[in-house]
Image (cartoon, rainbow, N blue to C red; front, top):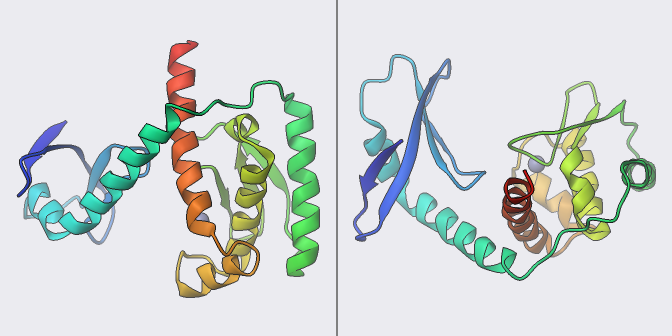
Length: 191
Ligand SMILES: [Zn+2]
């Protein structure tokens, strides 16, 4: 773990990882700033952060606000694994029909960095920890992953498709971030 001094007096913690990638990039999905660098990268991680400092600070603000909100929220703890899975299956069926999609297999797994994902073959994977989230938020994640079958990346066309059902998709993304922290707090406390 390294630290960087920003223009503002705040110190920013970050981790550097070298990977087989073409370009340097930043990740801040789990609340920790990770700088991913190509194995042959010449300049420093600090330089990469400084270059994207506005993005980093905006993300950090969103995370801080999510953390504050998480303090006042509770997770859903009375749902069984079976009823959770059935709910997801039902939503996958419903939204596939609405979107005229034919998804492949639905899988469940405990994932450390995301709520869901989809493969290029059309299979869907959902984080088992979604079980602790309210129905409305689970439904959002299902719809989000299904839209990915049509638009791989989070580009303009992706969010346009999302807006057909979720005009306020930003609110749901905020909620997901909030639940992420809430859940991780809960899981470390009950270990
Ligand atoms: Zn996505």
